[in-house]
Image (tube, rainbow, N blue to C red; front, side, top):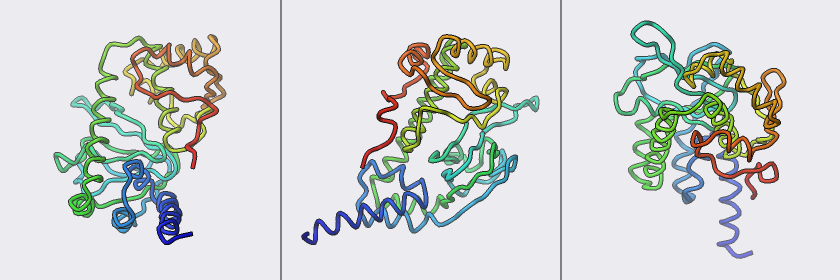
Length: 257
C-alpha cells in the first residue's frame, strides 16, 4: 500500500471516530472536508451537555453562544406566545442541530426541552466562525442547513389536510433517521400526541384519528409510541406535497461504507 492509500485509510478511520464522538462533524462529511479541516472542526467539538427528561438546554430569550448537536435522546423546541401559550416549533433527534434560530439576533427565540434523557455535543459559535473563515466548505454547509430549515417551515405553512400533515411528519422522521444511518422501518416517538398536534397545528384528537386512519389503511402499525412504517410508498402519496423526503426503502435504510 502506498503512502497516499495509507493516508486515505487513516482519514476514513479518523472520520468515523470523530463522527461517533460528535454528530456535528457528520453533518459536514458529505461536503468532503479534508483531513486538516475535519481535525480543525473536531478540535472545537469537545463540549458536552447532558439533560434529564424535562430539563431545558436553553430558554427563550437566553443569550446565544453555542450550537448543539444531539448525540442521544430527543428534544422539543417551543416558544410562548403573547398569551403565554406554548407553540411547538420542532423536534430534535440524534444528529440534529440546535441553535441556528439564534444566530441572527444573538438570543434564542425558543426554548429547548428534553423529551427523554439526552446528551449533546456543544460547539461555541465564535470558535465555529473562526474555523468557517478558514474552511469555505464549512461555511457553505451552515448556509445549506439554515436554508433547509426555512424550506421545511415554508412546507408546513402551506395548506395541507390533517392526513397529509401527519403522514408528512412521519416521513420526515424516517428521512432524518435514514440520513443518520438509523433503521427507518420503525419509529419511536418520544414526543406526546399533544406535542405533535401542537407542532402540526392540529387538534390532538385529529392527530390520533389520522394515525388510526393510516393504520387501518395498512400504511403503518402502531404500538404505544412505536410506529412501524409498513408501506412507505403509499404513505408518501398520502403526504402529498407535505414532504420533501428522498426515496428510501427498508433495503437501503443505512448508508453503505
